[in-house]
Image (cartoon, rainbow, N blue to C red):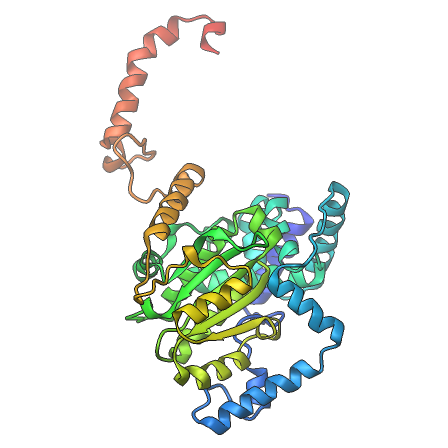
Length: 401
């Protein structure tokens, strides 16, 4: 019989219980319409002046409940004047231990348990777990909840199995999601802001012909998590710049955008929503109420023409020379294509065994099937063995090793 370790037995038990007990979302990140419902608007966008004013008033009431110190802290985080925690070896060990304790307190976490069962080395690695601690300012309890949500969301988007226990690569995406990634509606900027934070740009104007929200969410997941491989980004955090275009997005797109935060191991310091149309006021007033509290408090709206929006972003330390939005309204993907090429090269080099779907010419296939035996790589390997077989048999022990 196979002898299981205690943690393996616990993981198996959790997977068995998950068949009878639905997994719940832990924590509140992403699309959280609690304030919209409290304001009496429901899960929708305001449709007239009165409803927009109602939404704005609900947000102001919430902000007034913050202390002066909390408001000042929000301003500092938004512009990038928040101090960094020094990660001494002893501090890291202590926080990782706290994270393990908090994870053990979360009873229902079947997706996490399935990932542990698949490959504990990936899930329990320091590099992977530190992402979540940094994202939650080293609060171990929040980091544990975020980590569980990460695997829950990953399972919803990509299914169960071995993919839960490794990084998602470009070839894991469905065809629509790969096309969304290629069109560059979501991009990582070439440059960072004045505080050294990574900048993401989102262009609603190029997110067209959406047939499946799951494909958009897969594309979001891949682009953001690929960028989070950068440890400097994990430490410094990032800012998000959204260009809304001239018309409101569909509510389903808003939900998919908001849910990028669910299970995402990154610290969002600011969200800038830029628009050049006065008709967007109703839309933006409603969207603010549909975001989780941490995000709506960090949202900054910039309205006006191209130059006015450009100047407003620069006042927050965002160098707009690398913005994909051009003055003529076009959306550039020149840098994005280079970035995507670099990510794909990194995946080929580091996760080659995971992304090879079709065997290449000189790959060796194991198995007794005719296809495996007659594959060029297998036949070449067999020929090499036969060429050196006699020499190997006649060699002494030292030569063989």
